[in-house]
Length: 170
Image (cartoon, rainbow, N blue to C red; front, side, top):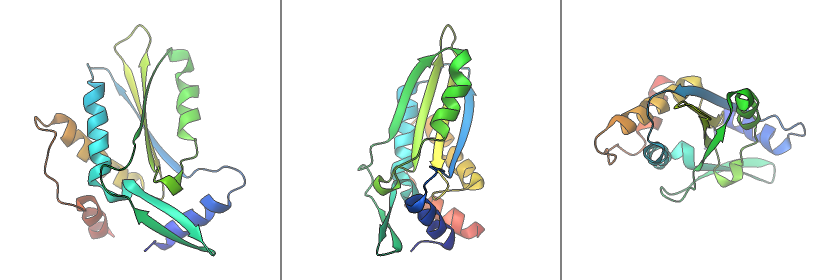
C-alpha cells in the first residue's frame, strides 16, 4: 500500500499541469580513475536489490496503487556524455528536473559527464521523491559504495534490507 506522502506525490504526478517533478538529485565529482562499466553494474545491482527503485505507480478510478517489478526486469537509464565545463551546470539542471516516468518504474536515472581534456567525471543521480528522501538517498549511496568497493560484485544482500532500515527509522 502507498503511504499518505506517496498518495500525495501520485496525485501531483498524475494531475500536474506545470511539470513539477519532485526529483531529488545528487552531484558528485569523481577525480580518480572511475570504471564506468563497474559503476553501471553497481547501479543496476542497487536497483535489483531494492524494490522501491523498481516500483511503478498507477492511477485507476481516482485511486493510486503501486506495482513492484521483478529484479532484472528494469532497464536502468544510465547515460554517459562528454562535455566542457562551461555547459556542465546547465546540463545538471536540465537533467535534474526531467520528469521521470513513474508508470514505467522510472524512479532513478544516472548521468555521468566526462569533462573534456580532464580525468574528471561528474556523477548525477536523479531519484523521484516518491521513492526516497535525502536520508534514504544517503543510505542507497552507502550500498552503492559497498558494491563498488567490493572485490565481488555478487554481494549477498537480504531482500528488502533497505526497506527494513527505512521502516526501522520511522
